[in-house]
Amino acid sequence: MRNWTLKGIAAGKATTDWPYPDDLDNGQERMRGFPKFDPSRCETSCQACIDICPTAALSTNRSEDIASNVQLDFGKCINCQICIETCPTDALQNSADFMFAAKNRNDLIRSQQPVTEAADRLRSKIEKHFKGSLHVRHIDAGSCNGCESELAATTNPYYNLHRLGIFFTPSPRFADVLLVTGTVVPQMIGPLQRTYQAMPNPKFVIAGGTCSISGAPFDFGYAAGNGADPFLPVDVYLPGCPPSPASFIFALLLLTERVEQKLKDGNYE
Image 1: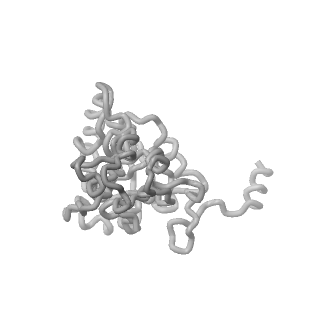
Image 2: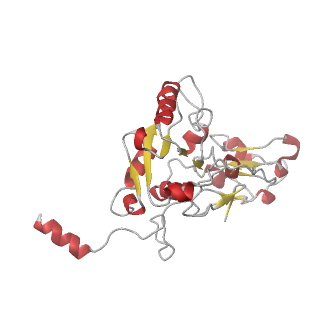
Image 3: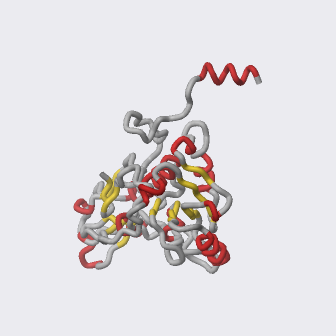
């Protein structure tokens, strides 16, 4: 025990100061972010990325004018990077952008036409009630456990989620936020809704991971699901397959309005 204590003292502080402004080290330096999409670079009649996308995140409404109608739905994107490798015009490029949590589902869609709705489900008093402390009830509603692995890392010594006043609770009676991961398979719809109903007001919902937003890439078959949106009023959408620990933290801070949203109409600022 003494040796471990001495090693800890010698190593010094392990926890990052991110997301505070003075510290830009968020532990994501080697991680590839979501594709950066510039629809203006698309060529007429080219649909190489649409054909190769495994989750239909890339699509178009009118085949006769593909170049002006291609859209990228980050709510279906699993960040496999295949579209970037396939695109012949560099309309899709690599990026380091990972803080893709958004309060509006349409903010996850990148297209030529802005689609953001004016309505925002978040309650106006959220900052007053939850800026100092937030208790989260996590429910796995049919996940591959990738999100759970990343979520567990938020409490490790590097990220130390508790320093931000955010805690996980095993009981919905003490929860402010319901964090849903997984596609929401049919067997989990009832337990998920009962958990939400047991939470005190005001209460909020985060859809964590691409499959909890749209079901992709498991949105097929009798045992699959299409995400949490049809069953719960989602307040924050966090795409990723899986989202990184820093992404989960960003989504929780976005919910409490402690950080600014980086995404609008699919554009990352």
